[in-house]
Length: 339
Image 1: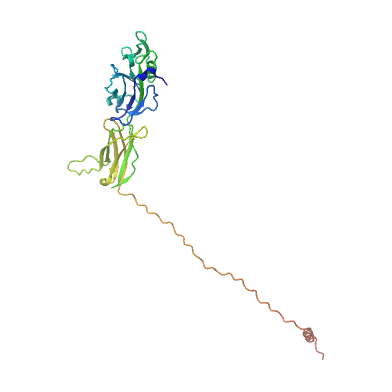
Image 2: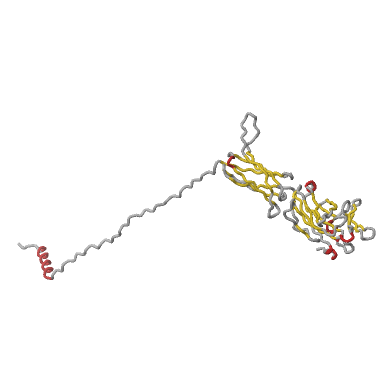
């Protein structure tokens, strides 16, 4: 990091970059700060550079603005309260190429002269304190340094020990204007909802929101021209990241079921965005098919019976005499009679 000369403690030089007017937020950078975390603006948005510079230099402060193939050098005076402000108007930023731009505010310090100065005739940056003026580097024209090399060379030159000038620096990024619309989805007649989106336009800028039926078209005087839609203006709010945000409330009580076109456009900046959504009569009612109910049938229990064994008939025991008698009778019956 480049350290400023010790004698700058006699003066105070601060620079801030504001992206809206009136100011909402500011980035304050002390002399020699890095260019990291630069804010982003869209083409056509103004840039306000302001701060405090004590000492009331009679020649004011010198503003150096560097970009890709772009250099602008001008002066700005300080006010009675030591404040100053430099504005890049919308007409200035509208033509800037996308990319990062470096701003350096030069204070002449004790001698009231800019020891490092630019010669527009030759495109060269000179050091006034080295003899009658020594060429340091070529800023414009053939062989010139491109940004950020030119900005770094200028800071090195102003920080030289043989001069008493000091500086403060900052930067910003320019990008083409954009306007995005978040997905809207389907809605029903009579519903209240919000359409929202994001943009790189500055917080505080205004956008025009138009909602029209896609079937709407010009009609003859004798025909019934029924319009369904809405329109209005919204103010861009500060976002949490690189993009800012906007929102537009919609009351669809007077809308007809149809396809609708949402168009967002800038007022002071040429930017547009669009999307489609549907307004329906009502959400379809989905009848849930009941799950089949399975009823368990309880079968009657059948008692299992084990058949009782058949009763065993026991024979009465016969006496020996009865058995012998029976045998004798059988024998007699088998012997033939004698005649």
